Length: 426
Ligand SMILES: Cc1cc2nc3c(=O)[nH]c(=O)nc-3n(C[C@H](O)[C@H](O)[C@H](O)COP(=O)(O)OP(=O)(O)OC[C@H]3O[C@@H](n4cnc5c(N)ncnc54)[C@H](O)[C@@H]3O)c2cc1C
Image 1 (cartoon, rainbow, N blue to C red):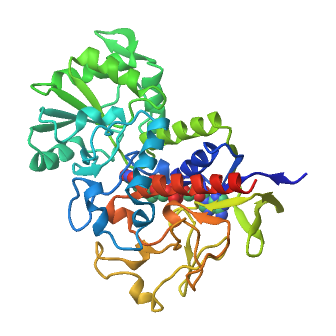
Image 2: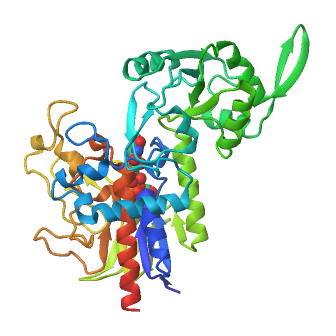
Image 3: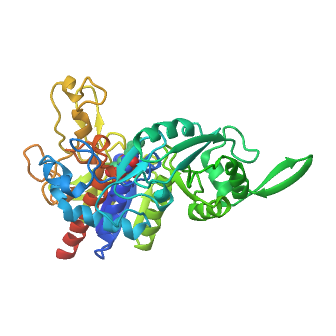
């Protein structure tokens, strides 16, 4: 029997998940097709809207009109961005929604990052908060050098920051995954220890607080790398706060990112609640149709399985997510062969300076103002194909710090229009 849905979304990243939720909330049947894990596991878990545009941005909404015409934010407008953040707020309990201004969140490298929404677990760490800070690193979590991060941070912020490195309590292997350490804190596992020749055991959170307490000094808050539990970070933090008598926060980390995974889990729960059908683990490789797409084709163990739909949304990510591919000669979109504008001379794809203005960072599909994908002549390539997130061109998410903001806003708008189209022509 043919598999048929109203809206078919391709891509399981934050853009695809936002699209699917938005379409499902229009009351239509939605299918999400995803090949691999999204980039959320590599991302910080922060939700940036616009951090830089000709310098540091304090209010992203004030900076929108200065963005180039082809930027996706010019398509979805302020309303689309606010709708994207509103959708996020239905999925998570992220902080930052009380103001339009960016928050400055300390990073594991000891810098501060402008961001629009951040997990509650990072709320006590904001750079605008002037309380003296102790950063605690672990010997085996080598990406976070707490003394170095504190030194760097002190140069940029209006408070004193100190750093200390301790051994994570317990007898964990030196190459233990951070998810293993997080699990020990989630479960508050009992940690064995020797004291005066006698073996005792105590809960992991208490053991950690005991290790940190002698280093507290005048610090009024303590920051740890973001490994304070995978499932129950709020519980872990409140126990540590009770034991230490000061506020505790997490510093967002690089991959594997527990805040990114928690955000992904929250989206998965919301998708399930909305009745979105998810099919993952295999790639979409082709499509059926002509001016209109009738089905996309998933390859599974050598078999080709069509997924029929009325409306389709491409949310396969950019060069990192494999939504866009390149050879030495060309850059292309592998499923629908959507047009992607790129300079003919490959030398013009990048700037010689590492942090220069790289054309490749803005490669992606162009759309009309309903997010329909355009062909080389600027006409909709298909009547029923829209795009959202990293696969869109016209912006450099890494330089601007706009990754999740573009994904949420274009996802919410593409999903809503796709759902409305189904309802208009049932
Ligand atoms: C290292 C890193 C750090 C980041 N840090 C931040 C940050 O701090 N703040 C922030 O706001 N944003 C950050 N981002 C950006 C953000 O995480 C997303 O990458 C961005 O918003 C794009 O999301 P997306 O859903 O469009 O694409 P992706 O997250 O790339 O997801 C694409 C999805 O499409 C699937 N897919 C691809 N091809 C196919 C196919 N043929 N068939 C089926 N499925 C397919 C992939 O498997 C994946 O599930 C970061 C990104 C990276 C890579």
